[in-house]
Structure formats: structure tokens, C-alpha cells
Length: 222
Image 1 (cartoon, rainbow, N blue to C red):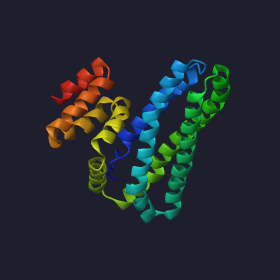
Image 2 (image 1 turned 120 degrees about the horizontal axis):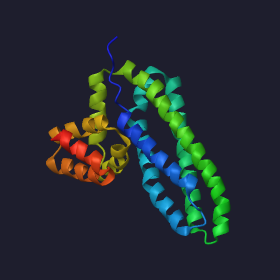
Image 3 (image 1 turned 90 degrees about the horizontal axis):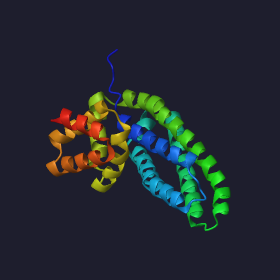
Image 4 (image 1 turned 90 degrees about the vertical axis):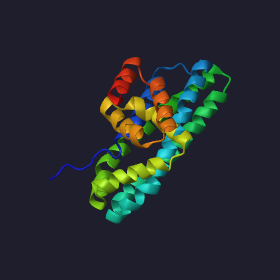
């Protein structure tokens, strides 16, 4: 059997894992009695939470109808994930804002125990969901569409994301991917996107990658 296109979820899911992993390190090690560290966590989580909400909306709009063509039962599993994850994420955001507004350090520390537990429960739930999409979901996409159609669907999704929101996604996708994934992102962009779009993406890449990683990407795109 010929190998199928398996990169439909690669970049965005690596970006999600990157964001969750870095937030996990912060949540695990920070001192919630320190208001500066709490503010840093809020600033780290705000764009991450916004990206996660947007990613789920895109999958609901573009992928869910295809899933339902193949199996309503399996599609419901993934849809139920999105519903429960959205509720968990909304509650996490609410709890973090509550902690940030508390003036008493000891009270912040006490409430933070629930936040830490809830965050890691959410992160583990989300990682399991990503795996279900990459297995159950991918199998349904393969059954319903050719590789060419899946690649075209990916381009359609990307073309309908506003520039500001695309920048938000790339903020996680670029550092979360390896050099081969980055070349698959930037190669077509350099060839087909308007020069200002490619230039903006390169500027963002330079800001989120190490000097060595950026130099390698720049050299291989030359």
C-alpha cells in the first residue's frame, strides 16, 4: 500500500504540544506567592489559551463534517473531546484570572493548588485528544479524501486565517517543529505567498528560534 500524506496535523499539533509543554514547566516550578511570576504566567497563558480555542474552532468547521461522512460515532468522540476541553480551558482561564486578582500571597498559594491540578489534568486530556485526532481522525480523513484533497484542505484552512491569528499560530508552530517541518512550512510560503507575508513570517521565525536554528532555516531556504 502506498504511503499516505500524514502531515495534515503535524505542524499545528507540534505547536500545541510546544505551548502546553512550556506552560507546564512554568506552572510546575513557579511561586504563586510572587505576583510578578503570576503576571508572567497570565501573559504566557493568554495567547496559548486563545490559540487553543481557535484551533478547535477550525477543526470543528473543516474536519468535523468530513469525520461525519465516515462515522458519526467516531466523529462524536472527537466532538465530545472538543466540548469538554473547551469547558476545562474556560474554567482554567477563569481560575487563573481569579488568582491574578488576589492580593494576599497565601490565599493565592492556596487557590493555586487547584489551578495546578486542573492545568495538568487539562494538558493530559488535550494530549490524549491530539493522539485520537492523529489516529482515529486521520484514518477517517484518509478514507474520505485523497492526499491532494487533504493538502488542498490544509491550504484552504491557512488561507482563511487572518494574518494576526496566523501569527499567533506560528508563534508556537515554528519553534515546536523540527527543521524538516519548518522547510515544509516556509518553502511553499516563499514560492507562493506575497513577499510581505514571507518576510513577516521570517521575522517572526527569527524572534522565536535560537540563532543556530534560524541560521539553518535561512541557509536551507536560500
